[in-house]
Image 1 (tube, rainbow, N blue to C red):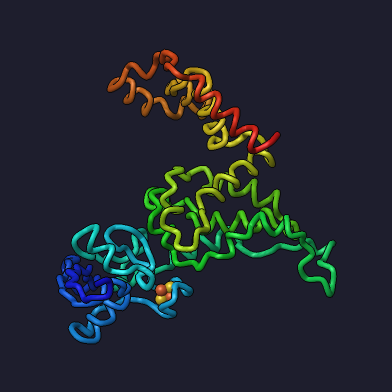
Image 2 (cartoon, rainbow, N blue to C red; image 1 turned 45 degrees about the vertical axis):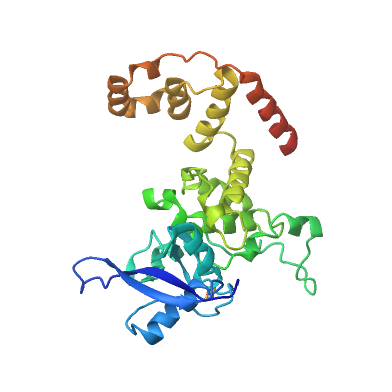
Amino acid sequence: MPGAAITVPVDVYRHQPGVDSAPRFQHYSVEVAPHTPVLSVLLKLRAETDPTLSLRYSCRSAICGSCAMRINSKSRLACETPVGPEVERHGRVVVEPMANQPVVRDLVVDQGPFWRRYDQIEPHLKVDPKHPMPQGRPNPMTPAQVERFHDTPRCIACAACYSACPAVAADPEFPGPMALAKLYRFVVDPRDAATQDRLVRIQTEGLWLCLRCHLCTEACPKDVRPSERIRDLKELAIAAQGVTERGSRHAVAFKENLLDRGTLSEAKLARQTFGLAGMVGQLPHSLAILRKKPEVARKPPAIEGKEELERIYAALDKESGP
Ligand code: FES
């Protein structure tokens, strides 16, 4: 019977920094219907078993973004994740706080770093004071113009993308997937007067640190697809400024390498990315790699089936237009 209660083993991350010596997992067992959301299970535990369990939530309807947490290692909204499929797939429900943000207590994190990175990209419309928007017509955009960013306003700032992002974990300069998706929204807004400035600045403020892993898109509960918006931003940045930054040089060299041999020539890729002068600064790093893998200095043979790659690139070029 689909609605019959099941026994759900739940392991919840518990930690009170400054009080507990180390984080731990506390095990619980709850009887609930399979469609019960993880959030409801946690609230039941707090009400009936352990009033000290700390978590954030508000709307319980996948609207406010407050209840994002890691459920069986995936960053998700607890109020829209039913326990049944989790138990079927993993045998239990393991609940942890969001990654890439300091834990305040148990499942509550400090979102300060997330919002600071967001603020840096100035996510608001900048209207040219010499050309103010026409009075009485506050939205002078065509449907086609609105269509270009129609999915980014769906974002509820839950930070699931930020939690899932390895670039955020690796580099404090990276603005994060949500911030870049929001930046895209203003870059393509025809009313914004700072498009060129935004595209130039973001190239040295973390745009090219994106690893293209698409984990943000997988995590996003609102299908904003931040990794696709970051890709769009990169294309717009190259169109606005040319191939001038290390990140854009690397992207273009990557494609050239693949079209040339069907695989990467690591030495050539590094030379094209950093330039000869830049290679000097990379010398200790390059020598360390060469000592371990001398073959990277040699030009690799072209792979079989390289034509298939050429066909893929030709199709992509045709799709994205001139
Ligand atoms: S409680 Fe608001 S999104 Fe889950």
